[in-house]
Image 1: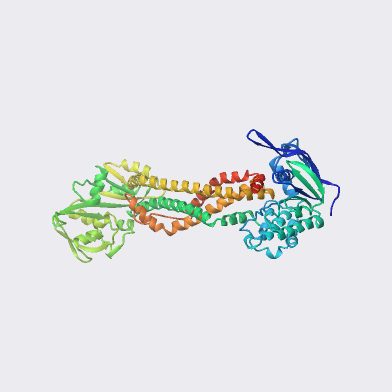
Image 2 (image 1 turned 60 degrees about the vertical axis):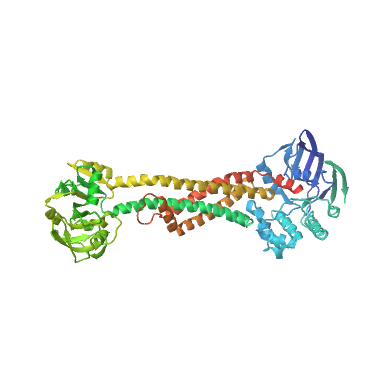
Length: 234
Length: 396
């Protein structure tokens, strides 16, 4: 499944500066990296090291102050100049599936409705045929008619992962996906992500404080003060 | 696949109490609006019906103050002026005229009437035309006289009560010392007819010695006719005055207009309050779901998708409120009528509040417009949310 060698993310000298009064804070400070198709990359580092800011930029949720970003061969940002919001929306829904620490499930929609919610706004051709398979893959097919309030936290995150998968993304961006889960559930989510990477060939970018989860990645990149501190191979 | 309408509906279910209260606010505004528009329509048509029930929309009388003449005709009095009887034929020839009826009003002072005496009003009417023109008059007892020269009388409800007469009883016309037989007693109409004693025209002319003369001609004008133009034409007849009931109607409508302005102001305030309520509810809902809206955008929702979603939520609230309000207005139309009657200087008989389909559609139109307008700002604000705002909130 993996198309080894082909780069899906190319970041070149990315900088993100926040201004607080007269003070300038470089949340991301001159980071260059690339991620290959089918790669599983973990970003680790202490709070405030710039992990979330970086993943937001890579996922087209935020614009860098300067630098260049190329996604699947398409230049998204060049010299800090980003494409329009409408174009970025198209890129986001074509390329990415996002998983967040909070699950953000709609409490009045059933599991299956939450999973299929992205289709309300955008649907890749034939994507609906994968829904049942994804529910099974996530182990929540028997819960599909339940409301989020009727399932466990681990199951909720599985629903959120299923929701991120339904539109056949090329890259999964997961920001602290186990932050709200206990050790056992975290391990299960880690297994799921690893399975998606290995069996489905999905590129996974993970931000986590959880060392055990980070260890599942092909590559761990540690950030400190907005810079790459140490790339470590798992 | 879940439709955006379904998502909007289920979003509203998340805060049932708040959504419910907003719907109640809109329902109250819709209720006020339907009731007042229903009143606006009902009042005028009831007034028109009352005027139609008079049988004729115009009275031609001999020259003099038309209002005085009318009063004399309606209430009895002295100093009556007369017109020649052939004027009736002349008027009947006009193309605008549907029907005419000749009338001769006479009044006699009866010292035994009431505490200090009073006038008895005798109205001579043509048995061939008057009953037809006043076909809505119902009899408590008996029926109309048919012989134009008969010494027979039909008594209005109050006249019969006052004279204490029943069908078959004799009735003495004081001063003239003529006795007529009561052949009919009318049911209560709520009009001046209640106090009138009707006799055949020829008999009144004979009894009072006013041969070939009339005090008035009642005219029923064709529906399609131009009343103003016809009125001007009538004024060209020699020595006549015209009392048009459209003038009376206009006067009443002017009196009522003050009350109408007041009630419409209340409706406007109710609508404004509900608009503010809707904006507040939706805006709060947007603020609470800011993170979630960001997530929806990260899933691929465009600004327009979010705008539609929030707008639909607003519309669902407004349409639900509109439906409840319209149902409430229909259910409480009678109560509203009672309340409105207390406020008005004059209220015609019959239903004052008329609620029909076109009114409901109009109200729905207004309510939907309220929904569309009040949803614009919250929807626009929600549509502008950048997905990053959600992510940042998550970090906090």
